[in-house]
Amino acid sequence: MKKLGHLGVYTSLVFLSVYLPELGVVHLTKFLGWGIDGYSVISLVWELVLVVLFVFWLKKKEMLYILKKSSKKSRFFHLVVGLVATYFVRQLVDAFQLQFHHLIDNKYIFQDFLSILYSNGQPTFLSTVLSFSLTVVVAPISEELIDRGYFMNTFFHQSKYYLDVILSALIFGLSHLILTHRDPISLIIYSLGGLFYALVYRWTKNLKITILCHSFFNFLIYAKPIWIFVYNYVYYHFLR
Image (cartoon, rainbow, N blue to C red; front, side, top):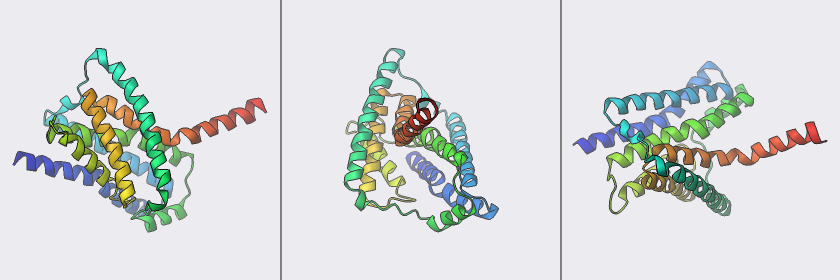
């Protein structure tokens, strides 16, 4: 019965962190008559509130041990190896995605509402910064707390057959298909990402390192545009 209770909590967390926020945020933003900037603000605030509430819940359940650091001697080594591995995994995922991009379904289930928000106000620098913050900082913290920290320490902990790793990866992949990318290729891509994070957590036993690897993985999405922007700025303002 205790495991069933944990499963109910976990399912609710996935629902609250994926589907419900988007449903509520798009409707609230539309109701207020705001554009994409407003949508970005509300989305970021919701995710931050969710993370804070979840940490308080973990404290109440005496489960903050999931944030316990590994030994000081191996921490730096684990971080460096994890980040290097993250870079190569990102390259493999990008190559795989490029190879099968024609099979990926990018349709967003709330696309009609999103079109209305775009008509109310186009993205600005603010929404770009907020989107970056959500993708690179807040989402990795939220997802790793729930999918690795909570799930892997509650179900099949340190399983001999790596069931904690496999199930965490699969559920992570499936949760990313709730709103968009409802196709087998996307399931493989996100599940592979989840598998990598789960293996990092299993190896390092350090959720903070796992969060940093996830954050770096997402940051690499923006790395090329940021480099192009910086290069053009330096060239046109100082070298031209």
